[in-house]
Length: 380
Image 1: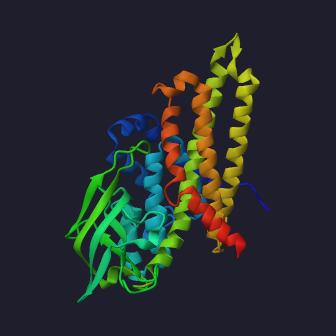
Image 2 (image 1 turned 60 degrees about the vertical axis):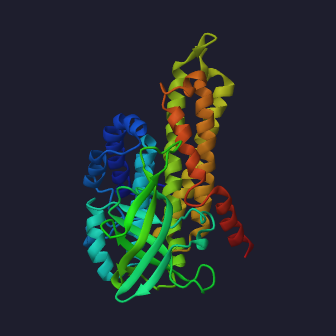
Image 3 (image 1 turned 90 degrees about the vertical axis):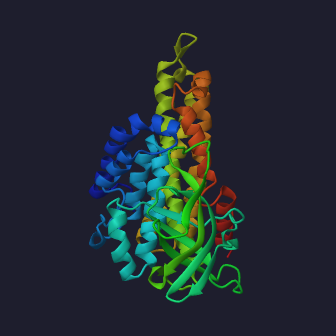
């Protein structure tokens, strides 16, 4: 059993930390205010190789694994969770989906453009009436000569207004048993009939834009159907294992930000003639935050390692997301409390961490869905 990182893992972590401190640390407050990432920030991420981290080298990527991606995402989310979820969706739900399930032709045509940052990927599964019950989607794919026509509305799409390629799930056989008549389609932003809809005004991760995506008779050629036209839901569930690792890593980054900022403040803030860090009530909060962070990180890294080994890891990915997201929210609560009244103002970043943390228990499968997945696995 080995708990130390390999040199290659450390290099990715250090590269992501340098990028995050150079680009994200100074820019994040403004991105949060204007509710958008800058093109320059995304271009810098692409130049650093973060858009194609898990894409094979023959398709223009770095050819690295899920553990590398988790290390990168923790560093990114330490300073901007909006950039973090943007890169997580792009890598885990779009690029990795193509690597694992796409045809050779699909990988050759789309992955180099995604890995270079020419195209940003978006994932369109959720609909207004189909959130946790993802198999209840109504977006319809009608078979026509040479391909399919897609019509429907997708909701809560990360990068929905700036993506270049959309992974869209649609019902191909409405008579099939629930979850079995769904296809996975690759739809470029240039497709006629596809357009972004309403942009959500969010509490947190505000630099990442979240929109509806509207599809009206969008033609998709047969060559851009991924896998079996009836087997898309299995692809979605497999992709979500990777997506949950990405959000668990996001939770690690926010959690670490809460801990590091709270330690700094507690050592500087004086009350009753001494730093508040010397009071047991504060010191114990910091101890609990640090312990929960280490425990969460071990769960995330183990799940990522299992996925890299090709081992079954649905339960472990759900455990990692469940534990990391809950611990992150506890840490954000304590960070604001340690900062007191100052923590409720924008003078300190902990109020942003508090806003960003909340979503980690909601998307890529809410906390209760993770418990459902885990309980089903352990009760078999």
